Length: 135
Length: 124
Image (cartoon, rainbow over all chains, first blue to last red; front, side, top):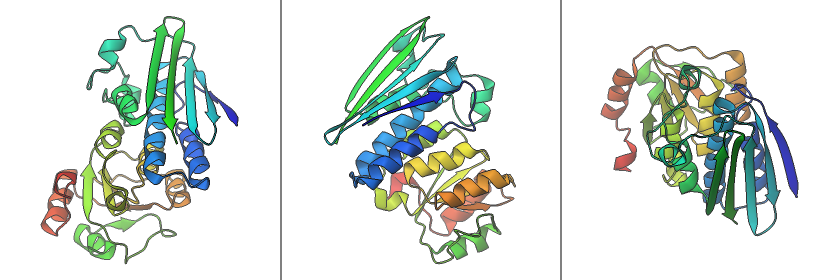
């Protein structure tokens, strides 16, 4: 099954909708709770990243019995230094993000540590984050 | 510890009357205002502990509820007399989360909880 969601920029009221959806989807299919937790955390962090850092984007979820693949893509402005962004504690988050509980600089490292496969590509045209979980 | 004792110790307000269970057992707490810290630090805490955990925070937005939901934490304690909106309370109840509030600061409420036997994640 494939599911596609639009993600609006700077709309933290809606942020978490996709991760809630994924969590319910896996829970209803009786996937191991620890896997569900890893998926939920990574999806939530990634969703928040698109909301607080980008001009907006989308999320495409490909789900089958063996694997869950989630691709987040946005329309910019991109990550200038991916190596720095992957370092724990590095953050370029706005005051708005911090006031809403995010911007600790732990998002990407936490995503990488929660999934089985991780890939991120970025330019000033946008960022594409692909995360895969073996089920 | 039963949740009713925690409410008593912190002179807490129960915001989520639909989900409140005075008999619920709680064993540990984690405190932060940045939710990424909770998502990082609680990621590997065994599920059975998370379900008996308390997320203590001054963050009163919907993102506190979302974070607890993703981590399977069932109790949120709002410190410093932060008041949730009806929308936040509703979101908590929809996710079977209990939301409490106390006028104590994070430091003082943590001290009171620890004194009463609630542990930190490094001790469970």
